[in-house]
Image 1 (cartoon, helix red, strand yellow):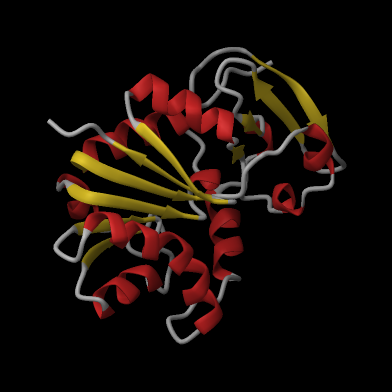
Image 2 (cartoon, rainbow, N blue to C red; image 1 turned 180 degrees about the horizontal axis):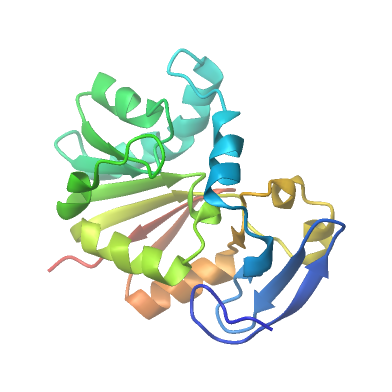
Length: 212
């Protein structure tokens, strides 16, 4: 079996459907898709182009507010943030701006300004992003460098609840979803990094770096 994208330990067979195989790490509990099932960059972007997430969409704003509202309650209005993987519409930063909070945007396909990755922030948001990124270990390393001491990593992603639920889980059907996290994975990550984990919602977690 392949090695885990997050902790690089050995993975074991977890599930297989008509489209892909899924493996699970018994060390950090990440469920992942072997590399042979990854889309190429062109096909991946074509999937994202099908999304129509616009600031005028009140339902999408309500969706993002499940992360943004509790986050701003913890960081305050003077905080500066980054929306990592903001998507074409960059809606979260516009919602934050309406409340007087500055949020920079980065997205590999739609907002590829890497200058924003040379700064540090009070918070970094990944809303429906982390499940798309292949190199989970490198991602965590990069995110930790983007956060100031005491900063918050706000992650929205649907979580693995066990094999029985996974078998019929619609979330795994998206071909761009390749890494699937559980509470146990976030607990492992918090312990490894020395971060504080807070479960906010069914699919929202905050990981806070220690203050110096």
